[in-house]
Length: 230
Ligand code: AMP
Image (cartoon, rainbow, N blue to C red; front, side, top):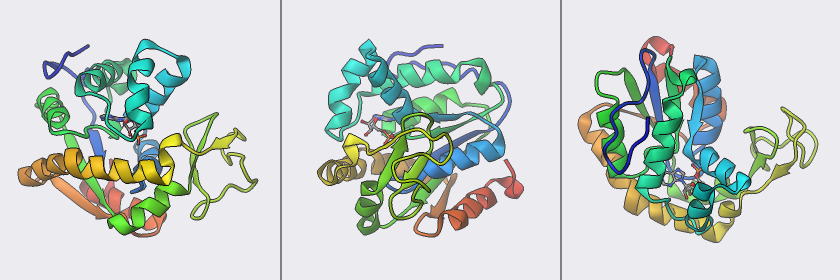
């Protein structure tokens, strides 16, 4: 199922729960999303990963997204919505899925709310003070072989530069350079914060303190899901 602008009609989901994980850059969304998706046995859908894949493959979408991503800005809504709704219409999302990095703007959130009408969903926000965020994003190391995330300080790999999970090569994202992180935080305040307020106003937002040890944050996230389960 595809969409243009806000005319999204279906997510392809027919049953399971859709988890929506929100939070500023460096809040630990990626790490927690991977764990939570594995725990709940649902696909982890990261729009950032989808764009990086398109970039690597040199697709038209990747070429369009490149400049926005490298400068720390957001990719225009219509490109994000088409890509996301195509992805979640796939068969593996029929039993639910976890969204990481989407939505990020008010129009994206409204399109998602409309698409998820009559479906079970839960929105979780990882809250971390801004002073902590720059350092966190700066130390992040991604794997070229899988989607695993290490951190130079908080979860260093056993062998420097090598992923513990798949032995792939670790790299630092271009947009994790301090200047770009500052821009991403600025964009978050301007574009994403009003969207977080929209979720807050609906009364359905679960706020989790993300400024704690990763295991503590993970337990809090699980706790926020009904009955501590998925
Ligand atoms: P992430 O890996 O989630 O930090 O995303 C990396 C980059 O991809 C972002 O800084 C944006 O440029 C772009 N991106 C990912 N998700 C979205 C989204 N939902 N809306 C707009 N741009 C996005």
